Image 1 (cartoon, rainbow, N blue to C red):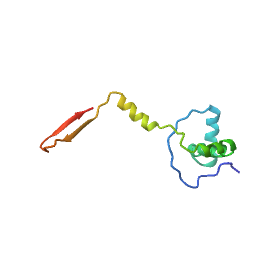
Image 2: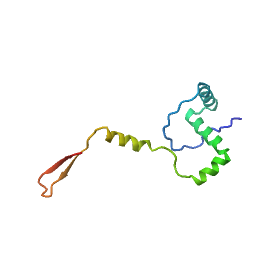
Image 3: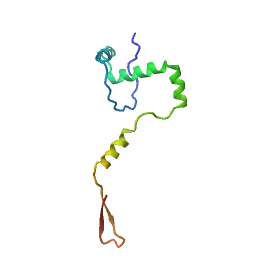
Image 4: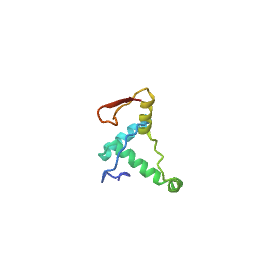
Length: 104
């Protein structure tokens, strides 16, 4: 009987790139084939299963419930702005007859 049960419902998925040992990669793909599931699903279930058994970590998470995930989206936007790209905006004049152009 497999330790990881086949998927029963969907969850929100985010992209994460990781490097694995060759042996772990082989085991991951083999177990996914055994279950008839994706490798993403197997990795998520392994994390859920193993970390739930660490009582010290479970207790620590209660006291540190905020997100520890990096905010990569914000950094990408900041780096683009810092790379010398400019924004252009047009604003109407107070008289309404013409607009002014602003570059920052």
